[in-house]
Length: 228
Image (cartoon, rainbow, N blue to C red; front, side, top):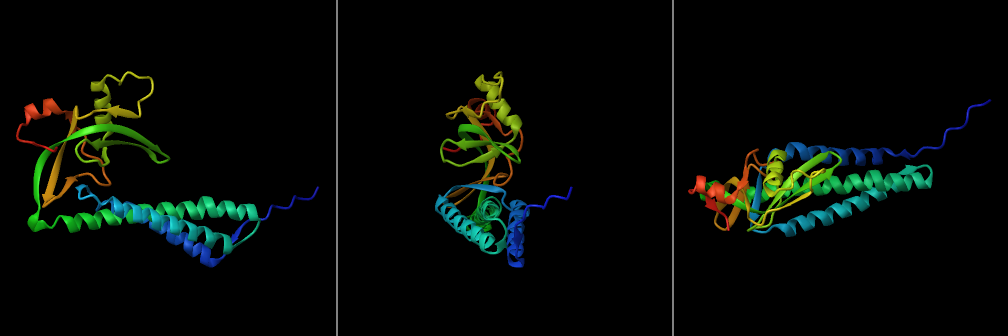
């Protein structure tokens, strides 16, 4: 019996391979850049910049899909699938992560010049905490009550919140913990004019042990500023 012919494969041009390599390099560069993104800015509100990042990411995703489709040969369904799942997804994700990280670094350097910035300890009341699952693992996040933002915390602190709220005995770890200012995060903060940020945050999680009950923390350390 003769060997069955192998199904035709998609072949990319040299330009398409170079484009794919650039996208992969952009994705990889997010990790070293994240080491410089070590603060979460609470004020001023820079959400409009993040919106621009998503628009650019969408544009790059469309261009990437077009590059794959027109710079490839092979079965049409395979070319469409490769364009969507590989070039489009990677292009959009790499762009939004890279631009978002770079924007955070630039905003923090611009809004907090050394000569006008003061550092102080503070308690940040928490509105809620939640768990976010992804292919790379889970992360645990708090949203402050006074000024909305997303700040990563250690799993041990999330477990502490579950225990004190009476939901730790659930068969599966709940994906949400209501706080409404019952819990606080003990943080190092900086202020420059109206700009306010949380240190040791950004692309990294707050140090383990940062979360506690607000009333207990204020009684132990009354000198800490409560952000309201």
